[in-house]
Length: 230
Image (spheres, rainbow, N blue to C red):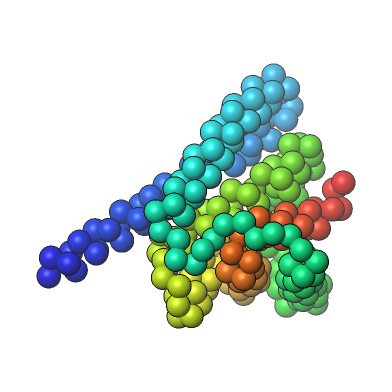
């Protein structure tokens, strides 16, 4: 009985910590959203962007530190650095083509009115139009790093630590599903499309055992999605 209670408390502690990392990330995006809303007041925008840059740097340092500490304490999958070779780059291109296929199918469903435009993407497009440079820079350069550390790196080490096929499958499935839900905040077919992208990123993380690879995929995906604004 004591072991069950301890395991339950440990799971609750890990859950609260992970939610905490997510919350401090959302605060960062909230600062950028506020700056965008104040676009007609340059002074407020400049001060807000300054605060965001400082906060972002501290956030990135904190989450990177936590991720590295996790790997030092418990790393049964041997995550680390996988050398970039012709083979790994070719495989990376294969994962990216899979993400492009998902995006193509998604756009086809939107254009044929099977699915509606995702509210998250519509809001992001609106923000980019109002404050182009900082929203593009954040979405393409910063968000992929933080989201991969939170949704793949820290998440899998908090909740799916073992290196078995079952845990690997459940870890990728759940991280992708949560990733999708937090981009839609609703149980709609669009959730599956976002989740599918998350599943590819999770699979890449486990395949290469190096978070730099799925971060690169995330960067390329966001860059392709926002290319129309460049």
